[in-house]
Amino acid sequence: MKSPLPRDVNRRIGQALHTYGMLADGDRVLVAVSGGIDSLVLAWLLLLWREKAPIDYQIQALHIDMQPAAQGPGSAALAVKSLLADLDIPLDIVPAAWQPDVSASDVIAPRGDLCFSCARNRRRQLFDYAGSGNFNKLALGHHRDDIIETFFLNICYGGNISTMVPRQDLFSGRLSLIRPLALLDREEVRQLATGLGLEPVPASCPVGEQTRRREVRQALADLYRKIPEARSCIFAALSNVRHDYLLRPLAGARLHRGSK
Image (cartoon, rainbow, N blue to C red):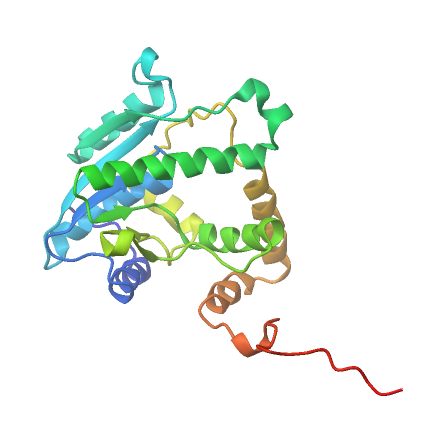
């Protein structure tokens, strides 16, 4: 397979894989494939890397179908199946265990909360599938912009400083989440997809894209236009935390009243 990876992109993918120890010989890797460009590029990349790396690992893709099980596989699921068949990557399609109640979404909860609930349930379903199939790695297609956006989402809506990380070990180390695209920008992933001739599968979510994430993305786009180096500086800051300059109560501190 001829690699269309530009040298710098190839270097940063390798840097992410090696720095965070994402892949090892004998791994069983489950790839979550929604049909979006990021997950499709990730599936292709893992296949490419297996051919060039001095290690061997198994790849299995999983698509969680948002169409109710009684209706059979949806159009998005069938499109993903066709794309991955071209890559010779085995795919399993499972119906979503939780369906958003669109009719009640505006009454019960803001759309952002509904999207959070859906994502949380899909993540739980991925974990269950990985556990039952004895997979030790779960690969997700998040890139650098996703990491930065999540950082600001957690600050603005969660009141905490945190984000998704390139590798996260779960369940006492039995499963590791890995994000091989963590050091690439959204546009770089899009360019890879264009070079591969990949087109995104139309989303089957009945609610649509997360409103909160879209708002944060737009705010960051405005910031990047004003401060072009902001993206790189924000990402660098996530691994350069000065704990002594954050607001933390001192252990055993007491309020001292001044004498009158």
